[in-house]
Length: 166
Image (cartoon, rainbow, N blue to C red):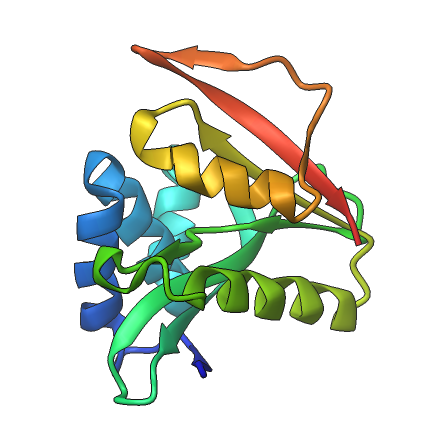
């Protein structure tokens, strides 16, 4: 059983610790996104520099029954998105808690919340990095189809886009 709560200053440090583990290859971006979601001045700064490309940033921490942050999830929009679209942002599960159903529970909560908010499409981007293989399998299992966007090369891997009709 999970408890989902909005990201805030009280749980920020614990959430960032988790992101630094799961997204170690992208630590600056995850920290910028999370901080921008709770501080409008920081958002303005990063948006002006082009380091944040989304809007309506909203992130959540996910805790287990013991109150430990075991995951994160969230929503954002790209500047040119229609109002019925949302993007899945910084979705992850602590490696120590994988394989116990928490990832599915978090993804289910996120999809249900997007539907509750009237969204018709959920999009995400991921990569062909080996460490994201299990996440890609989960996305496929949950109906996130590869979009028509062409994969973007990024070093030794590609960024791929997926979409789910809600």
